[in-house]
Image 1 (cartoon, one colour):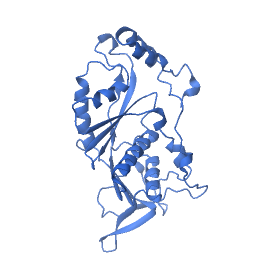
Image 2 (cartoon, helix red, strand yellow):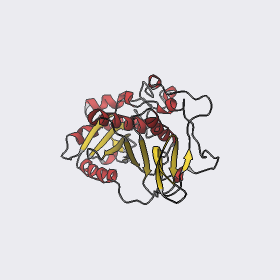
Image 3 (cartoon, helix red, strand yellow):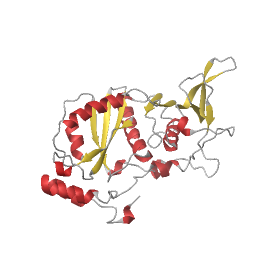
Image 4 (tube, helix red, strand yellow):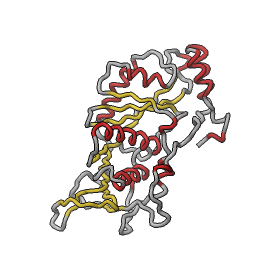
Length: 300
């Protein structure tokens, strides 16, 4: 899973709009090897950013669809870009730990692509998608990115438009049970940014002779700083020692009911472009946006 570069919207082929600050449209991709499908999730900056709530909400959506279609899986393997802000954060670790504890998977592995890696499957698919987008002369509103990809000739791509209620507040929800830690169960410090591989549920651990044995460790996580399973894992528990609450799905709610304010100059710039080059529908959309200076109480 990975994020593509932001797609400035609206897209028009006019020189006077080139340097204007436009609305950011995010493209988050999750490739599912079971189906050989690239799931592309589009949403603009008024709906969400690229943090833990967005990543976990969309990942959970894909996992639920796979389970509904194929039944229960025992082993989940995730590969993610080595980005601390997007994927290498404690909330994703908390979520994966909860998948094992609530019985949805017996084992979960989260592996990070090493720095300087060659293009991942997501990068290669994004390259094809971007080539297609380069052929499109105009994109009036953010939803048109998703619609145009859905109607394109590209195969093995599934296009989704993300609505406001799909972004759930996993940060607040998971903090009821978990807390961030940078030391193992023995009190030894470690650096989260150096993690290469984190494992939940069942994992390999070397014995005194160096032979690997499969061990159940549902109460802890195994962390490694290389991809070598012979490396002795750092054993960590993210569960709170005090004031720990069991997770109740009823407590998981959308992050917000109203759209986020956009950056100050985005709304007037988009309205200016819409008045000159776009349809009435696009003009109504950009006029409906809330700018940060219009209602500061809406800011996150």
